[in-house]
Length: 425
Ligand code: ASP
Picture 1 (cartoon, protein in one colour):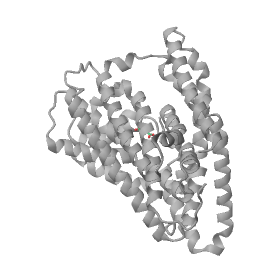
Picture 2 (tube, rainbow, N blue to C red):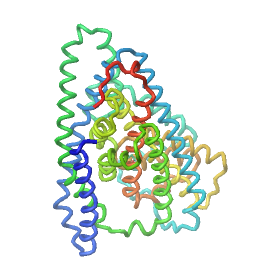
Picture 3 (cartoon, protein in one colour):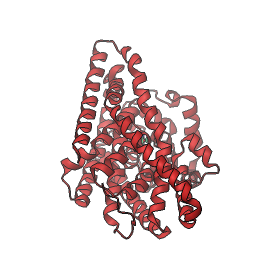
Picture 4 (cartoon, rainbow, N blue to C red):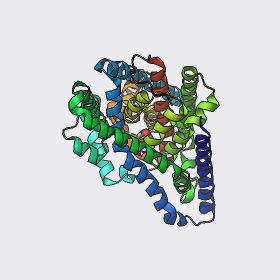
């Protein structure tokens, strides 16, 4: 790991802790309004990260397709990546189900009069649209598959639909392989866009400590720990599950990379902290790519393909959270879930995580898929609303760690013949 990256990781860590302290000070001195004045700095940081996502994802995937050389190589990498995503997501849901059944956070919980009213109108209609009873499972699968194919790539880019951009970049990159002469100028331009996007990412990362400092202070500035207290047991269950899964992923990462846990955590630390403070895997993607390539030494062509795909469809943290939340809601309403229903939760929580966008709060919206599939009241979402943002931070950190570990695993499973262009840093 380079000296500069170590310093960067340290500065980001300091930004996070200092931000939490400032948030507490603002809360306890009743000066939470101060946060409104510094909030734009955090917003600018998130906008900068978002700004770079589309050029970075499109050019990276296109160039990695081009370097892969053959559709077979894409197949080899793709099947390994998707295989990893499925297995680890399923394991994450399993931990969630085990933890929530052991701790039983919802039994005897005080429901109050919570409902969907806490969600804004758009989110309410999205939740209701998802809740189509028995067809929920089919709809979830259909939405994921259909949603991946762009009818208009320019529109997909404009809307920031990363999955559609990925699909278009894969196809366009493959065509470039078949028409090497005609595509030469295009490859040059997109190769240039890729290098420029990476350069810009490094510039934005210099701004990360201050951006993270501001975002973290906002978490506690206004309401301190009030929301957290009432749902403490539920939160502890989710966080314990996430930490457990994080530990499990860390073991895999150390095994495949032959590096120590401290090394791995330091190497991916900036991405984990950025995920934690932005609650968005997509916004964190530029930093995750830089960390995995430069600090973990993963081959660039692996990282460029596996990470953007992972950020969009591989969400271990969200899957775990969805299973805990659904069973918590059932417990809180006094509904006993049969083994069959828990099995349906297992399946739908995995799907709901795949379908969730890599943005803040997306997991809460796709919760309705899980709830409606087992006939639980959709209003239950209102119960967990108050602490969703905090849990979103934890689950996004695990999502991003899972993507990073996936890239390490896939890279370790590929021989140099699978990747024509050896580009270790
Ligand atoms: N915020 C999460 C992410 O971007 C998605 C979720 O809400 O669970 O990874």
